[in-house]
Image: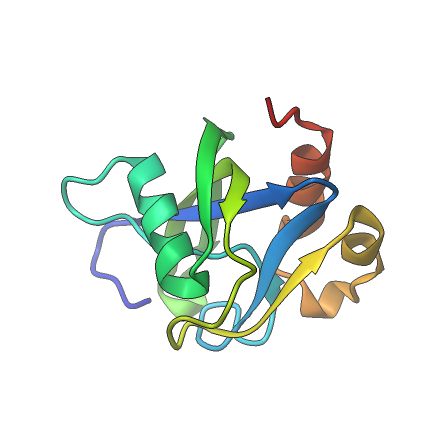
Amino acid sequence: MSQGEHPLTAVLAMVRREDHLLLGRRRKAPDLGLWGFPGGRLEWGETLVEAALRELDEETAVSARALRLLPPLEIIRPKEGLHVVLCPVLCAWQAGEGRLADDELAELAWMTAGQVRALDPATASRDLASLAATAFQESLA
């Protein structure tokens, strides 16, 4: 995710299917090798919800219904030349078991709250635990 002199806007698709969340282990920087939510850059003319659902489909071949936007997160890593505003979108699963649909993710898993909590913090992206806790508390109605 290279960038110029302005922050990037990116989305996270936080998909919940009953008592599981869809997580992926990243194949590329930033967060290479870490577990997190599928997502990526906002494209010109896209809404945050459209971007989240597009990225979800591109990376996992899962379809979902967007429920609501969660507060944005800011990641600033000057040494890496990285400044990203991440916009999480809580989604309810609709179809697809999940498959690696492009080269962004190395692995996919549907995880329960206990499995997310059991992840070694060194293998989880920043804010994964708090975002997952929020997703598990939300209604899917």
